[in-house]
Length: 282
Figure 1 (cartoon, rainbow, N blue to C red):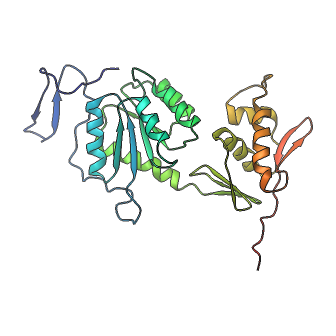
Figure 2: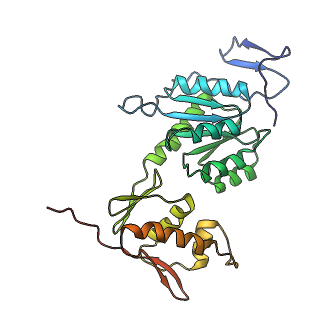
Figure 3: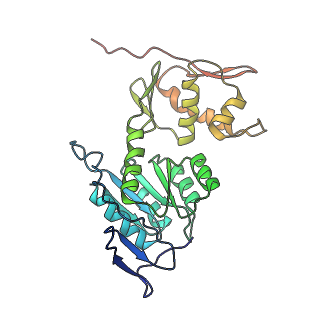
């Protein structure tokens, strides 16, 4: 992936007399699209009492990091940058879950790829929306990223208005998710948190996906094949015990706060049972 490393002697910038657009003169492709003269986008929370959005950018291209910082700050979004995946993971581990509203993640980096970094982020249990950033226009790459759990894809060069709009869009979509309730179980889809009987249940990302599949079935029985396909993207039932292991862990956690939630239907599959929510004592 071609990257600009600061300003070389062969690069210069000039102001176009015809349209007033700042352009980069280089034999290499610029990662930055020219700024248009459209009004600057208003930040998602510019008129609210909420704190500014925070965005983590993980990219080894220093020039692109500076560009993104400028674009986000102009829109009222607080950027924090990491020049490599190792530093990015350190920042995520040193801050409470949910500290960032979005993550911009470069696909091609020298030490670890964006694909590997996304897996590591999700293994932390961090479900912050991730936008992949790449210089490749490959449809296969975009499909791969989205299937891995990325929320969006940005192809360099990108106009700052589009970059800001995409960050705000993924945050808006996540915040708009309505909590899902099933009997005494409540799933916060935006924060990917689980409550049962009003008490929080701490589950792993995969356990959350498994519970979500069962709850969305609304008491209908789901076969092993259906669960493996929906939760693990396994298209056929192998001899793997991954489903049994995660079901055991989920049952131990979720049943601490109520009656057995997941029922095994012999030779058919599994279903969730809705129990009445506890009523407040008067």
